[in-house]
Length: 192
Image (cartoon, rainbow, N blue to C red; front, side, top):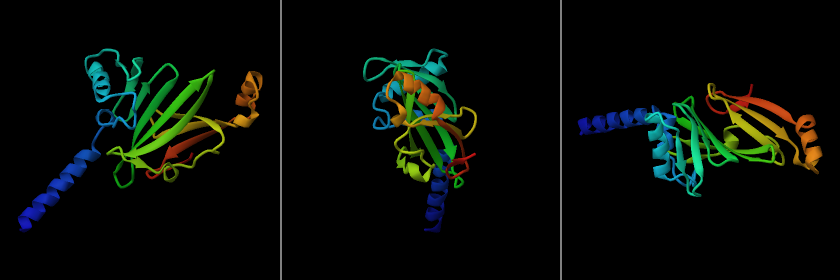
């Protein structure tokens, strides 16, 4: 009886250690279609296989346009979903060694960008974003970029109420924008 319990416990520890050692590349292949509906399982596999074969990491997505994996590394990925939309992903570790995936989705329109951010665990279960970072003002446009080499993000925020036409939009981008650098402290993104 004790041997069975010890064996089960050992297997559980080995399985959790194996899951904790996953790379972002492996997690992208397991990403559910609900998280990224434009890319099917085949699309993700095709992009990763193209990287292995030293080809351009492109695929025809659900809208029959081209999506390209611009960068795919162990802890960082950037996917150009369409000409005007992109996703950046970064694999983070919590102090308790659990995996956290941060995904920034950005839409570019007329020279401006608006981003949203979501967090997932290593099984792609959605995590509460407010517990992972301080959110910028909710009525503001923001452009969020993840660092390719560090566990940090850069946020540029500007107030959409200052935008009446293209002329004031350009002025608002320069005069009314705020910038923040957040760094991952093992539990959440905090001001640097």
